[in-house]
Image (cartoon, rainbow, N blue to C red):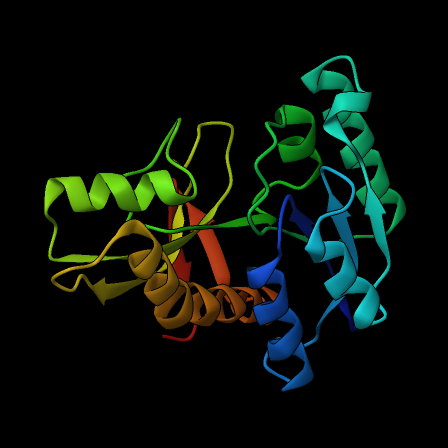
Length: 213
């Protein structure tokens, strides 16, 4: 008999605002049959762990500094998620490098949200406020967010959803970051998770087709 529930692990490294958006969406019944059953943080003491605890979600710390290599860390991470019977992995501000052991364990089953319209302002070194600083330096009139499937190449996996956000005159990196989170990230990340849980994401030739559209 098929498993009715889609078990979701959310990987975090900081405050967990995107984790909170997913928790809120689940409470509203917006993740389909998806349920967040595990939160893993790459360091201790981050507020995302508190968010998990406050919502009765199992949370654990897998601290990168406790492992000698990326390979050792990736194996521990993949093993922890396999043990927890995870179906979908969501990177929500997870800033730790992982290797192919994780991708191979969860092929086309890892989603990431990036705070720009890929292929702009993405790839190595583009994370957090750096993305918004680069966008403002370039003088773009529109930025936004992208949810994509994670592959070994940074920010290069198949795009699932994108949402544009207007850049306002007088924006600084912090105001732009906030607007993109509120107007794009917190909307398209839960939506992409729901599409996955509903079995509507199809990947072929590095492109995503959403079934039923």
